Image 1 (cartoon, helix red, strand yellow):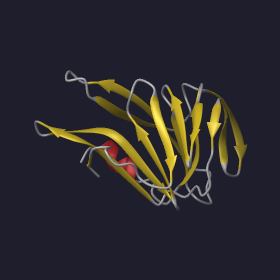
Image 2 (cartoon, one colour):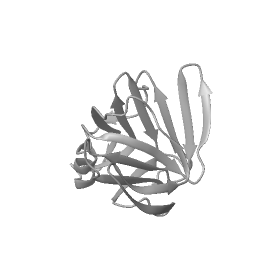
Image 3 (tube, helix red, strand yellow):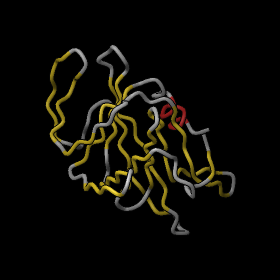
Length: 159
């Protein structure tokens, strides 16, 4: 299993502080919310702590045309505009479009994708928060779906 994937799973039990982007386009369809963003950033906060981490999400296309989700762990909300602050549960004031949800405790993280020639490729990330699932799908404009169910057709579960 890829080291980044192990780190992604380490946010289980943490709180999802928000989904950030320079621009988040939002679409409501029945009981689903869809967010569309180029390079969104997820913020996670350890409960009862000011410890935060961010995950920058990007995509790339492989030689066969498959969309691969790239996740980069970082400790600031760069490249988004932000200010350092000193609050008990907050280190940065992010100046960007933001989406928050309740409940916010990450119960489970799973990655979905495909295997090819001995390598594994991530195409979707699923965060389970109470009765909600947040599914993040790789594409030139990354799609984030907030639903009551995990969508099918998102690839084999890799972790």
